[in-house]
Structure formats: C-alpha cells, structure tokens
Length: 115
Image (tube, rainbow, N blue to C red; front, side, top):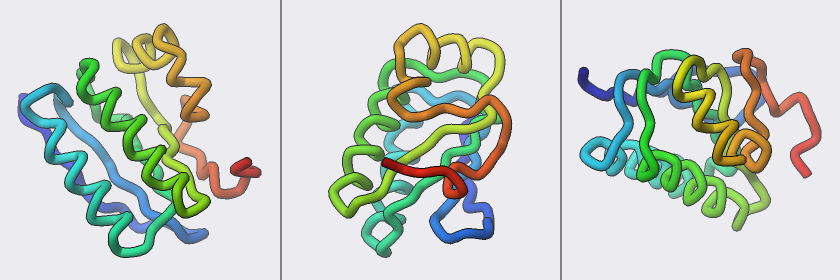
C-alpha cells in the first residue's frame, strides 16, 4: 500500500494533516517534510488524523515526536487522533498515546488546554 499526506481544513486555527497507508522508513521523510513546511509557515499547532493509517513503524513514531518537539519550540504541539487497529495499539504500548495526548475519536484538541 502507498502512503499519502493531505492537508485538511479545520476550524480553530492550526493545521491538520490526514495520513493514509503505511508510514515506515521509506515514507516517513514525506511526513517529516510536510510537518517541516507547516512549522516553517508559522503553524505551531499540528493535528495528525490517523484514521486511514494502516501501519506505523518506529521511524514514523520518531517523526511524531520530532514534530511535537519542533512545534513546542514556538509554544505549540503536535497531537494525534483517530488511529485504530495496530496503529492505536502501538501508540498505547509505546506510551506515545499519553505523551502526544492521543484521542481515539477525531476531536479537535485545540478546544482543550494544551499545557
């Protein structure tokens, strides 16, 4: 399966990227570049919708953490929503669900305190 990253319009400011397919060592540079572009454009709140992501390995997880660290420099954050199946299980097992304030439903974390 292929991998794709698409921008999604959302209310409340910030940016949303919808991920689909398999995020692994060969496709993680595409996500990293998309996050870099958003942050370079001044976005400090980045939401990743994982509903259509079918696989994510450790390199994909590292991109999530790197993106959160980049956004935090400007007082922002990177959050994850909508994962299911194996992707959700890996987020929970690695502890990233807590670190990146993962939400199983596609809710907008901008409505919550981002402390």
